[in-house]
Amino acid sequence: MAADEVGEFERIRRFFAPLAGPGGLGLSDDAALVECAPGHRLVVTADAIVAGVHYLPDDPPDLVARKLLRVNLSDLAAMGARPLHYLLTTALPPELGPDWFARFASGLAEDQRRYGIDLLGGDSVGTGGPAVLSLTAIGEVIAGEEIRRGGAKPADLVWVSGTVGDAFLGLALLRGAYPDLAAWDRAHLIRRFQLPDPRTELGPRLCGLASAMIDISDGLLADLRHICETSEVAAVVEMGLLPLSPSARSVVGSKADMLPRLAGAGDDYELLFAAPVGATEAIISLSSSVDIPVTRIGSIHAGTGVRLVDADGRPVPVEATGYRHF
Image (cartoon, rainbow, N blue to C red; front, side, top):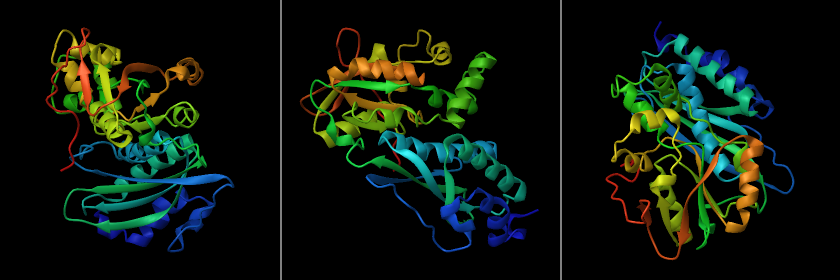
C-alpha cells in the first residue's frame, strides 16, 4: 500500500494521536498548550535527521524514531534540562507505507515511556527526495541553573561521559568495514550508531558542578571547540585518556591512526563538559550513583583552539576534527 493511500489526517489519527499528552489536545487543534513550573525555564531544541546521512534507509523504522527522539533529548541533557514534550515534523517519500508508520510510531511510544515525554503536535508533508525527520524537544530547568557553553574557565578539567568512537565504527561496519570483527562487537557498535543513549539522568545532576557543557554530535574535538570559542578559552585533550569501549578497542588494536580519528568522530551523544578542579570528588560520586562512567580527558587553558596531545604532551595531527554539515 502506498503512503498516499493513507491521508495526512488519517495518519495523524491512527499513528500519532495515541502518542499525544494532555497538552497536545489529542492533536485536534493547530497548536498545543504548555505549562511551566514556577521558578523554571523551558529549554527548547530542534534537530533533524536525513535518510542516507544520519541513518541508513533500510534501518528499522522503530530505531529511526528512537534515534530522532534521543538526539534531541541529548541536547536537553547538555543544558541540564529534564525532558517534557516534543513536536514532530516529517517529510516522507511515497514508498513509505502504513507498516513503516506503525513501526515508527511504536518506537516513539517505547521511548516516550522510557523518558517520560509526550507528543504535542507537528506537521507531515510529502517529498520526492529522501526522508527528512525533524523533532523539537522541550524540557525544563530551574531558572539560573542551566548549563551553557560559555562558562569554562582556565584550570577547569574536561570530562566526557561513556565512551567515544562507537557510533563512527558502527556506521563503518554497516558500510562493510571490519568484516572479521566478532559478532558481539559488531552488534554493540552498530547499536551505538543506530540507538544513542542520551544522558538524561546525568545532565540535570551536573547543574552546579559543570561550568560548561555540550553533547557530542559533530565530534569530541569539534564540540569541545564550540565550548572553547563561546567561553573564549583553549583546551588540551590527552589522547591516551579517551575512553573506548572493549568493542572499539577490538577495532583499534595497534592502529596508531585510529585514536585521532575517533577523537574527531561524531554521533556519540555523550556529555562533554568542563568543571572546576574542586568539583572532581562530587563528579566521581555522581558518576557512581547514576552508574554512568565519566572520564577526565583534558584541561582548559587561556588562549584559543583545541589540541590533541600524546603521552609526552606533543601535538597529534588530526585530519578531520568533526562532522561538517556544509
